[in-house]
Image 1 (cartoon, helix red, strand yellow):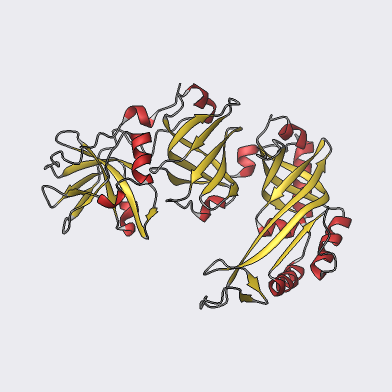
Image 2 (cartoon, helix red, strand yellow; image 1 turned 120 degrees about the horizontal axis):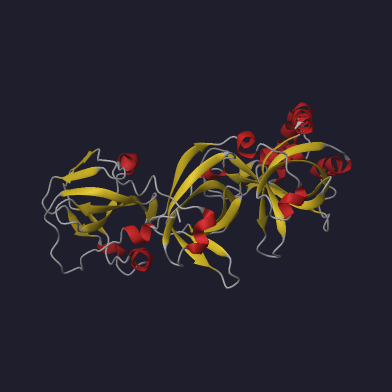
Length: 410
């Protein structure tokens, strides 16, 4: 197996509260968390091991600006013989429960006052955090509860107040990742189509139905790996049938929209997140300049020569493309939408049928257009139904003709 288990390779072994603190001030960085929030404080955690006696410490760093300078296997030197003190605010909190459960640790430390840090590049003899990851296809051989690192393309499926669900794809294998966002907020850049990521310090789990999934820990972090080309990665034109059957988890398809099932738009205040009404923030206490973010979601029934399936899109640019709106129409649409704040449509409930925005829905529903999309297969939690999630879509006739001609020449 080419899976490397971070939990087997390194385990934290922090001293008890009454133990003597270490006096050696030279350490090696062996692990790092993402940016965390706790009691209005932003920080990140680094796992350090002493060069002298191999004692390990989990240390809170509040200097967020130095986050990217703390790199795996680098050495750090402290100006004090006893650079750490126990972070008492973390006692009996979910922070401690998390590291106790997943990393066998009992305390988190912070730097003593006036302690200065010097970082030096280390030898890349073993870069646990950046080089060694497991394959999704091999996770079935990993014991439940083990800590693993996974690389792949990420698709956000849903987000609630303190949790988010992602789907990770790698070589036509997919797995769901459940992230606790109470202390950590995954960046918006994760939603960027065509990007590849490595996610560190995840826990492998298996459901009662024998489905493998992953959960986050306090030490989970997302590392951007680069852009991938859908043309190079896929190199073929897929079909709805191949996605439904599970033969492919990600594919390019050429399709038509049969029917709009659901559609919703909402303008929210960029500063406080409240709804927008008549071009103003609905929260009376918000004093920020009028600036709003448009959120949207659409569910459509699509078809190709091989099948029919429901597809979901949440990028507003993709939604406007599926509605076949031109740039001037989009501008007018947004102006109308900003005046009402929100709009929702359902094929089963046409309560907004008198609204001018509704006419755009009728127009899109009555026209025939070909689209080319990059889509991911996923299974909905509510009905256990296979659906597609739209990553990219275009209605450019030339682009569609080009890919169809290339497919005919193969």
